[in-house]
Amino acid sequence: MQYGLVFVTTGTEEEAKAIASTLVEMKLAACVSIAPMQSIYKWQGKIERDREWQLTIKTDLSLFSHLEARIQEIHSYEVPEIIAIPIISGSNSYLNWLGESMQNSS
Image (cartoon, rainbow, N blue to C red; front, side, top):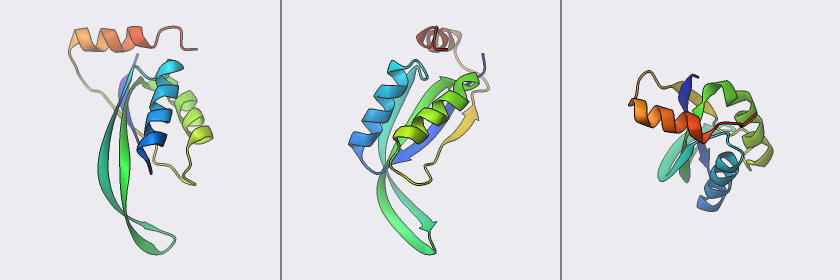
């Protein structure tokens, strides 16, 4: 397994919690952390400044296409951030738990 972190932002805490719950229930993620953040970005030619919610999704990257598709289905943004970063190393006990949490996900 290739574990990684997937980052997704949402406009509301409720949407963040709904996406997180869905991914964990579907065993597409072992854990999702949610944190408030301030984003400054360019959208449709204008600089935007918004409060958003950052999801840090711990997953098996072999599930990324399924995870991405599910997020696209339920996310309210026209172009949601969905980016993955591999976990290069980690404690064996945590990585074992991560893998066990997503067993039988296919």
